[in-house]
Amino acid sequence: MSVRAEKVASLIKEEVSTLVQRNFSMEEFGFLTVTEVRMTPDLRSAKVYVSVFGDGPRKEKTLALLEEQKGFIRSFLGRVIRLKFTPTLTFVLDETLDHAMKIEQILQDIHKKDGTSEE
Image (cartoon, rainbow, N blue to C red; front, side):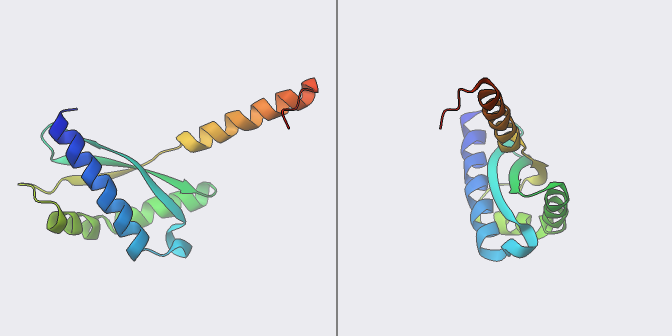
């Protein structure tokens, strides 16, 4: 990714995070974190990776709500970020944290079976 694309991605991540915290209720959206934004080289599209705390249905509901609010989020970005074109947004569920927690649980289970608990 070019330096400009990285800067725009970082700015979008910051602005979307702030917007979600200020304008969307946690009851409706759950605990949502913007983990990463990846831009296309022409800066016309952005993949916004989000992590949602909760079970599968909660995650799916949150993604659906983000899709419903995509136009609002994009118009907000168009006002606060001065670009020739406001990028189209695609929201993607980032399950890295879930995978890390699952691996941690497996390691704890192994240690318990071996009798070498790290606690």
